[in-house]
Amino acid sequence: GPVLVPILGDQLTRDLAAIRGRTKDDTIILMMEVWDEATYVKHHKQKIVLIFSAMRHFAEELRDAGWTVDYVRLDDPDNAGSFTGEVARAIERHEPRLLSVTEAGEWRVRQDMEQWADKFACEVEILRDDRFLCSQAEFDEWAEDRKELRMEFFYREMRRKTGLLMDGDKPEGGEWNYDSANRRPPKEGLAAPERPRFVPDAITQECVDLVEKRFGDHFGSLERFEWPVTREQAEEAADAFFAERIECFGPYQDAMVAGEDDLFHSMLSTSINLGLLDPLDLCRRAEQAYRDGKAPLNSVEGFIRQIIGWREYVRGFYWHQMPHLQKANALNAQRGLPEFYWTGETDMACMADCIRSTRDNAHAHHIQRLMVLGNFALLAGVNPREVQDWYLVVYADAYEWVELPNVAAMILYADGGKLASKPYAASGNYINKMSNYCSACRYSVSKKTGEDACPFNPLYWHFMHRHRERLEANPRIGRIYATWDRMGADRQQDYLDSAEAFFDSLEPAGKHWARSS
Ligand code: FAD
Ligand code: DLZ
Ligand code: SF4
Image (cartoon, rainbow, N blue to C red; front, side):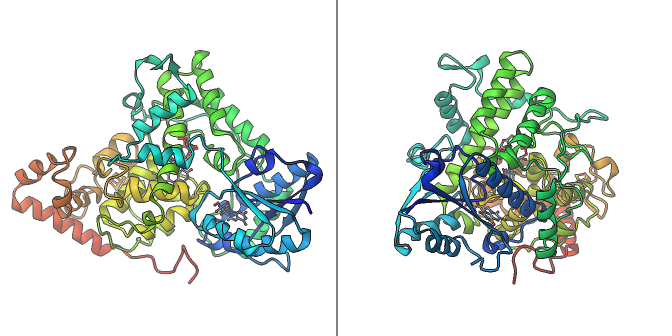
């Protein structure tokens, strides 16, 4: 029999390990739209359209290149609904001599995959996903004996390994990290060049109709669907980023402007995660822009750090910390996720804008995810499982391997500080400095307590107060308690009362948006 090669929805490249060594006349590629994947959380509608459309387009790409593709659609009457069920059916159809698959990105799917050798009569091989620079073994070795797993040190290893922005054995320009140059607040009227937007073709439109019909009760808007769904479109999006936006990427990386949903970000995460773009190739292009004098070092280093630093690091961290990372709750946060994360109905102008962008685009940029939406969940003490589900549902680029470390460890400190040296807690001041949100908000960012005070202000102190025992010993935080102690009991009580009053006004999510009951 032939070799059967299942390709998962986020493995859409002909460079994939399981495709690379195969011959066309001896291989059947299997692609499966399955109910379990579309509903293990109730993904944003755009996320499902994106993945189905990109899968269907990739199947065409493969067929055009002469491969045999067995493509199972969601509404095929015999669809078994799961990867394992569909692989079993395909084995009956094709009687392969070998099942060759590239390891799944997520724990949940890899657990299933590891059963396949026992379940199926044919031989099974699981290949390493070498779209990532750093293998699990390499990460585990790096992490061994380290108490703290700081990205910065991992990142330097990756710079050396790839030779990106290296000047011999020294970092280009003398520093490894130019983050301090990447915190410019938005100036009045800051706006970025329009990025390319991709009009749905017939294949995408069919997916839109399918999702409206089958997943109509999922979160999110389908009014504008503009994501790249093919390799050519993704390349066009990358070209536009390198031509028009990378120059300002660095300085305005942490800036937020109401209604400006992309600013100078690359908007390439969906394409990278699907396999439409190669991350190392993008880094090389960024370096070239610097060498050609088209982009400053701080922009290029920042971009490269996000990819060979953060992206590789969180993936290593995920596998290193699974499965317990899913349940981690070091700060014992128990509050339900407020309803407004789903509806956007809140008077906090910053939260409302970030949630609107999330609903309209299945996207928000990094600092919105971190310092607005994430910071609020941290300060309010929202249960990590509910926050994890939300992030996994709402972003088109969300897969558990990248979402979970960012949510549990980066924003919520639920891992107790393995990833971050301190919680990313901030009061309204930070958001005011880095955005134009506060001028249009019904709350006053300069008011510290009382009804009109920016909720981030009392929430910040409530958080610091309730976690004093754990945080006081941390040298990067401890001195904050000197400020708190100097306030005196009345002022402290005002803060705590204001925070409690705000908590009382929160409505927990009513209907179960993230998971089917
Ligand atoms: P850019 O700002 O242009 O950055 C370039 C690339 O760097 C991104 O495309 C991405 O591949 C990579 N990158 C940047 N930051 C990170 C990071 N912290 N972790 C991993 N990769 C990074 N990214 C996802 O791809 N999927 C997620 O589910 C996801 N969830 C997140 C949840 C939280 C709470 C936070 C704080 C961040 C999350 N991120 C996630 C990281 C980051 O916010 C997105 O990658 C980024 O906003 C994507 O937009 P962009 O392509 O314009 O990124
Ligand atoms: C996210 C997703 C969705 C919504 N649907 C599918 C699908 O029907 N078929 C598929 O192959 N992949 C899908 N995916 C992506 C998978 O969840 C992702 O490839 C794995 O979880 C990675 O471990
Ligand atoms: Fe957000 Fe507070 Fe500013 Fe309002 S005042 S936009 S709640 S930071």
